[in-house]
Image 1 (spheres, rainbow, N blue to C red):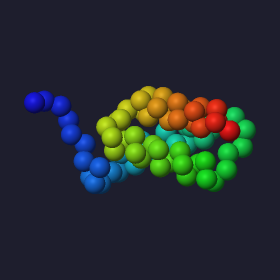
Image 2 (image 1 turned 180 degrees about the vertical axis):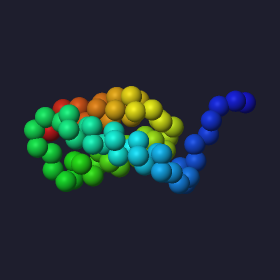
Image 3 (image 1 turned 135 degrees about the vertical axis):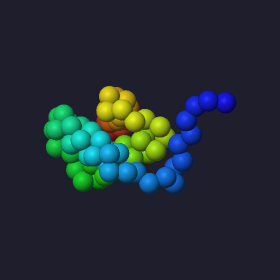
Image 4 (image 1 turned 90 degrees about the vertical axis):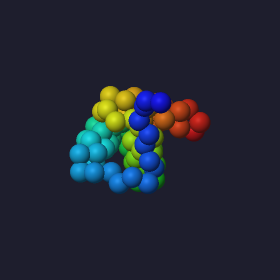
Length: 76
């Protein structure tokens, strides 16, 4: 039974934090218009949740987070 199990309680190490910081900065820079602190916090929480659920590449995290951002703006 191969595969990787990601423990939600596992600490995020320095490399993971650096990746999350870079992805978050890129997403904030790419956003059109002004975002508020609540939206930014929500995006940061989503990125951490995605990372903990197994998404570990910059491309995956950005694609998933952009999908979440687009969905949230469609409901406004």
